[in-house]
Structure formats: C-alpha cells, structure tokens
Amino acid sequence: MPELPEVETVARSIKKEFLNCKILRVRVTDCRLREPVAVDYPSQIAGGVLQDVSRRGKYLLMRLRHAAASEVLFHLGMSGRMLLTTEFHPHERVRIEFDRGCLVFIDPRRFGFTRAGAHLADSLTLGPDALDISRAQLKAILTGKREIKEVLMMQNRIAGIGNIYASEILFVAGIHPLTPADAVTGQAVYRLQQAIYHVLREAIRLKGSSIADFYYGKAQQGGYQNRFKVYDREGASCITCGTKIIKIRQCGRSTWFCPQCQVR
Ligand SMILES: [Zn+2]
Image (cartoon, rainbow, N blue to C red; front, top):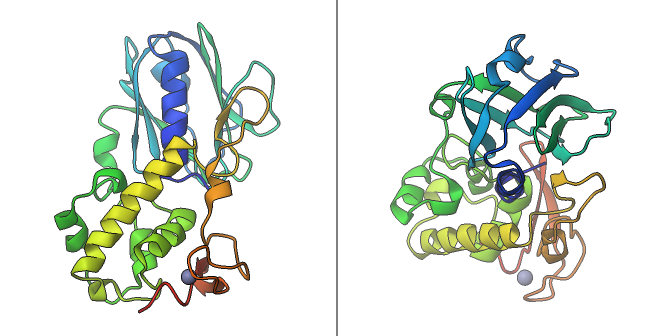
C-alpha cells in the first residue's frame, strides 16, 4: 500500500515529467472507485496546465491553471499506481492525456479515488505531515490508551504513515508497538520523532518500497524493501541484537518487532 515515501516519489515523478504541460483529453475508463469519479471530471480538468504537484499525507495534489477546476486530488488506496504509458492497461481507471504523454491511474482493487475541484486539500482531515511534525505536535497526539502503532497510522493525528513504516519507525525508536500512546513520554518522544524523520527520508531517497508507484511501461523498483529492519522479517534475526523478529496482529494488521530491542 502506498505510504508517504511512495506518494512523494510519485508526486516528484509527475512534476518532473509534466510540469507546465497542457491536458488535452481526459478519459474515465472505469468510474467505479471507492468514491465514483464524477461525471463532469473530464470537463473540469481538460485544457488545464499543470502548475504544481504536491503531497498531503498519502494524498497527491495536482494544481492546474486555465481549467474549470484548480485542483485534482488522488488517493492511491491499497493498490493504486500512476503509469506513464500510451498502452492500455487492464486495470486503468483514468487516463489524463498531456501534450507530452499520458498519465494513467490504475487501481486493481478500487480503494483509491480521484476528485477535481477547488480547495480540495482543505477538505482533508489530516494531522500534521509526518515528515515535518514537530516534537510538540508529536507530543500532543500521544494521548489516550490506544496502542502507539495504531496511533501512528491514524491520519487525522499524523499524516502519511501506514503499516510498513509504522513497524520500521517503532523499531528504530526502540518502542514496543503495544505501548499505550500516553506512555510514550520524555526521551521516547524525541527518539520517535527522529525515527519518523530518518526512516521516511531514507525511504524517499530510495524511491519507496517494493515497486515504485510511478513507472514507464514496465516496473521500476523502489529500494527500501531491501532495507526493512523488521517489516516482513518474522523469524529472521534482529540486525541489532540477533533476537528473532516476532509478528503479531494489531487492529487486523500485522506488526513486526524485536522483543529484545523494543521494550514496553
Ligand atoms: Zn533486537
């Protein structure tokens, strides 16, 4: 599932490829996404010129000028990807044809969506972005008895972190994933903030995990999956202490951690 580093990689790639390019045509191949694509979506953005591409949490935001809608918002959901291709893809949902090439939104599992309009970012109920959350802001969201791993994944408290990076961040911070949020205090808050920053920065530098979510026809690999310290490493040795990594279930999702390095 695309998280902050993957969406950031996609945003940068689209910006590099299509900045100042004009949208000639828009085709909604299949509107049945988590939120159906509006009937007037193509006419809202056709004729627009791409002014900027940015990211808010796990959302991708394209700013346009000379179009009826000033913004286009994408959420990649569980399996959404952006392709630069002129070829048809069996899971393609929306095709935006720029004067320099086509941007194709594919989403096999349909948990993503796209929307055109104005002030779309303001309508999102997101906490501070994980990449630049301050220590005071972080401290403020660490309230209540919910487990810390769950809190890190609550987008209205801190935006951008999902299941992969939550496990990785807690390992780097040396915090047990079942710790109640309000028990993360003092030095642990500082370690957590540093871990969030360093893990996400490193993942962005390596263009995210598994396969990149923006590619040219054929898949281009992101590099962070080779750096996983605990994620998907059940039974393997901890890189720090050699103890076997454990996998547990939390809120219906898997969590990986080292029982020696991450104490409650
Ligand atoms: Zn360890």
